[in-house]
Structures are given as structure tokens and as C-alpha cells.
Image 1: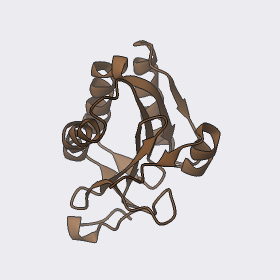
Image 2: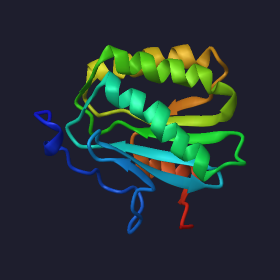
Image 3: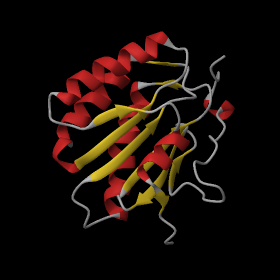
Length: 161
């Protein structure tokens, strides 16, 4: 069951042991761990979350601004979007993420999406967004888990303060 109010949201498990999120918005259920070599982020969302247009807008504005501020000289970013704990989404969220992906295509080296298991509605939405973004030349792929993506690309958290 999806959280009934913002106070019901809990933080997701960190993708790296002992590393706190570099950027978070607990009221939105959004957490980002910045990674280095390649520079970018792993985004995770509160378990049971419905991805709303408001949340997507927060990710692509405030979250994106925080990432760019953290890596001011980085030209192209590596993104991992972990939607594994999400239960549903609003179509406005898919549109916001897709439009943002098109706008920043030249600043993206790769995007890895972790879809939730056994949720056909979300999988179809992600497939539609992925098809639209591939037309921009973006490198997108899915992974069954964040840990497999971390291993495949040898991702490491930014441990600078």
C-alpha cells in the first residue's frame, strides 16, 4: 500500500554501506548518492512511493542543481534511477523525466534504470520514456538491481565532504 501522507515516507536503503545520501528531500521521498569516476548520482525513492509530477519536478530542478553544484566542472553525468520500490506513477512524472532527459541529453554519458519487479504498468511507462530518449542518442539501459549496476560499472560513492 502506498504511503498515505508525506509523514509516512521512510528513507530507502543506501546503495553503499555506511554512506549517507549527499542530497535528500525526505518530504518528497527522494535521496541521491553522488558517485565519482564517472561523476553522477544514484537516486533512490522511499519504499511504497507513488512518483508524482511534483516529485519529478523536484528531482529535475533542485536535485539536478545540487548535482551540478557538487561537480561544477563535470560535462557529462552518469545517472542511476532506482525505481525498484515505487508502486505507481503519475503520467506527468513520466513526461517531466522524459522532457528533462531530452534537455540534458548532451550532458548525459549513460542512464541506468532499475524498474520495480512485477509491475507491468511502470515497466510500460519506462519503456515509452526509454524509447523517446534513445531518439536523442542517449545511452539508456535497465538493470535488475542497483547492486548489479554498481558492480557492472564499478561505481563508487563520492567520499569527499
